[in-house]
Length: 281
Image 1 (cartoon, one colour):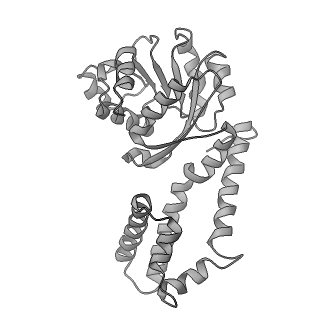
Image 2 (cartoon, one colour):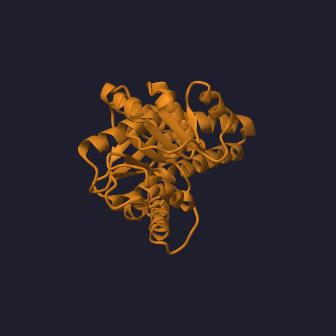
Image 3 (tube, one colour):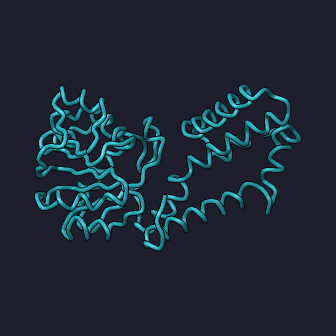
């Protein structure tokens, strides 16, 4: 977030962060590191952490009287989103609301925040906690191009940002990147278990699995080649990798149909939660 126009808008207009758990804290740290003054930020949180209290000495406002701000970020659980209703009475049309409340649609947010409010719905994932996340965003009809640019710049403080063509795609995003870290963590568990089954000590098997997954992911991000080409680069004809991939890529029983079924199940669950058919995470 090195855009001077964005920093000026936030430092001059102010920023309210409603909720400061793990994701909210990661965002707050990213904004401060990018140059947003703590004096321009108010955090609304019923149980402020010691870290927030330390930032208070640098001018950060905690649980003060809410005033209209350039941006209000809602980083709370979906069931707590209605608490923001008390804030909107004192907001103005120029306030941009960014919500990272999982499963809460733009229509639901507009019911709470007002039909005229510009609202961006965002779906980050847990690697945002270390600045390696990816966030999908979708804005309502009240958002201007500048609003979307501002939201993207702010969320880039914790990783990459993609803009969706339609909010309808958010359920698929949930199935892929929102839930995806859990799939990868389980893959690490399975790879380590497979190593143990071949005789490796448990600590070494886990170290190899973690480093292999993280290293391959980093290479996929940085390399100019496609991921398919990277896979082929490792695969010698009739070699060890080819033998393993023969199992992993078996038609009908390999990883692809299993992963498609996994993402589809998560996507359907996201649809159910968004439509209010059931509750849970």
